[in-house]
Amino acid sequence: MNALSEQILPELRHLLSEMSDGGSVGPPVYDTARALQFNGNVTGRQDAYAWLIAQQRADGGWASADFPLFRHAPTWAALLALQRADPLFGTADAVRLQPVPRVPA
Image 1 (cartoon, helix red, strand yellow):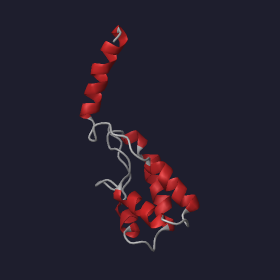
Image 2: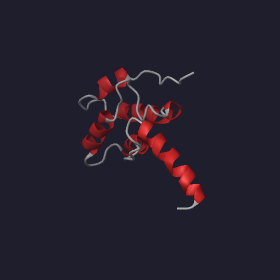
Image 3: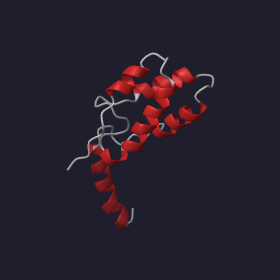
């Protein structure tokens, strides 16, 4: 390792260890929601809607609470997509639970 790597890697490991999900990366809520919003009548859409509902956080929003300023877009995208899926089980509850994401002071 070079000197720059030796400085950056410990800090990066520390930051990742403090994240609630350990810095894991998965399918983006925003992209899934937008695809469902504009192409919601495709085969297997129930599974995609169910996945989207399962990604909702306990506070009603979507995306990681570790980055509160970046939760607005995925949350709104999920809400817009779920409005199209109202007849599907659980979507009305997911939309009703959604509060406005809070930004820490």
